[in-house]
Image (cartoon, rainbow, N blue to C red):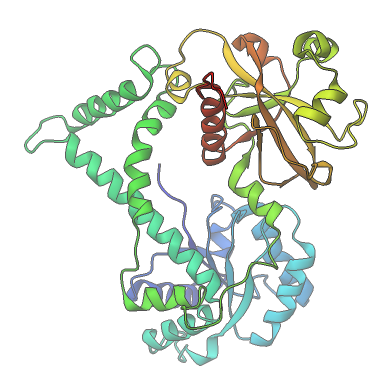
Length: 429
């Protein structure tokens, strides 16, 4: 339940370690100090580390630079295991080695995230003869100067901190609602409130099957509103973000350097996030029986469907780059409450990006933004006229390709239901 540290200090010299740690604490910064000789084997992974202060020479006795670099690399790969962006601030008497260390880590690290940058903090600039930091404020000022060299990363870290604050605020609001003053058993009272939230989200019969999913379903709107209404809290915050997005009277930001297919994949495509294949928004391969009887089931051959109904060119049924798929488009409340009945699915064609026809699409067709999937540039075309109903058991036996995230899934379901519910009239023109 407790959050792993986001700032870590590593040194083999206890005095140097304590001096830096104390200076950070005096400036209100919480960190995890690791005495390399004693504590390094027992530390747990810290996947969300954002700043790593590390002495360069952690090995006892004479060793080469490559040995020291490999030691830090081993700590990252085998112990800390970072999963996101982080800076390394080399707490060292040899600041000139920072660039070489960065090169080594960029080349050698394979199974963890590589550092965003490596900078040096020269010990001799801040430690006195007793190995104490003479002026902690100056040290902290230097740290701020280094991190200010990466305003873009700083903006991301600032956003992350705001999300954590919004999460804390949401938790506090639930506690305030749940626990009345003077209660003798706050745990039981909080439990009753959480149970009420879960039941409201998925129904009394389903809440015990997956309590986390049920309560998360109810708590998400509480957090979502707080995140959606985040604003700059200080002038410094505002200035930080203006370094990323210029003001109107300055040069406009551009996005031409960004791989938009990868952005679309990040926003809209996800792996299944549960053990249930029939998850809402799941995109699975068309069942073998339906594929073998495509004409009988859909009243068109595969070639005719791809060409006329799914806006695809150069389709070949034996080409593995084309995938007939089904998407599970059950109503959100029915899925959350695990209502009985067959699952409503729609036929789709997952096709290479360049195989999309430029001609006007049928009104029934919905087209996803182009996205990258396992190195390929793809599109997903769903036609509202081609529906299939499957039981949960049958759906569970199908091979999933990915899941559509909520925003694009909402757009798709709006299109499907809007098309299906459109009124028609007899008119004479």
